[in-house]
Image 1 (tube, helix red, strand yellow):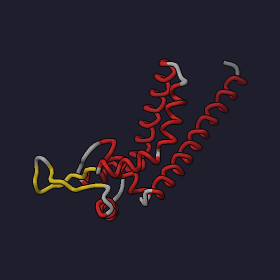
Image 2 (image 1 turned 180 degrees about the vertical axis):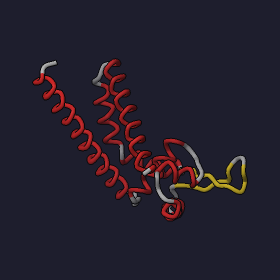
Image 3 (image 1 turned 60 degrees about the vertical axis):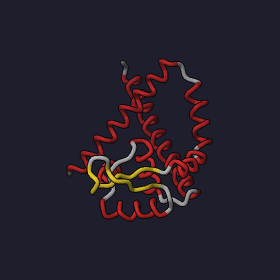
Image 4 (image 1 turned 180 degrees about the horizontal axis):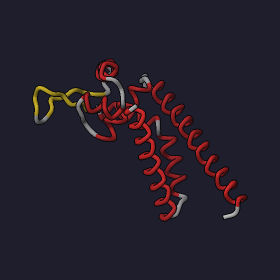
Length: 157
């Protein structure tokens, strides 16, 4: 590879990283608007999303998965339960513990608010060949793992 090719590649990589930051901002704005329409704070919406994606879990597990301090989590869970987004249920193997579960009827509100983005993603992803989708999935998986590792490294400091 010539030096010019190396510079061009570095510029392209920098552009890709910039576009990922743009995507992060756009998704954060979308989530903020959805949360506003549903009367949910950003952290509340994040917690609800984790419960939807990973299923019922204890408050401690939710706190760990979101990186939200337990004291802050208490306020979030109080709001989510009060507003009918989640229910607390006895844990199956320990009646003294509780698990949090999202309320399906309320979730339909959220899913409807994401309908435009979901349709756009169907169209965008549908335009790629299977092999291209495999590359996209690999990139997203590796990028997610890198983000998780960077987060864990900051926690360790």
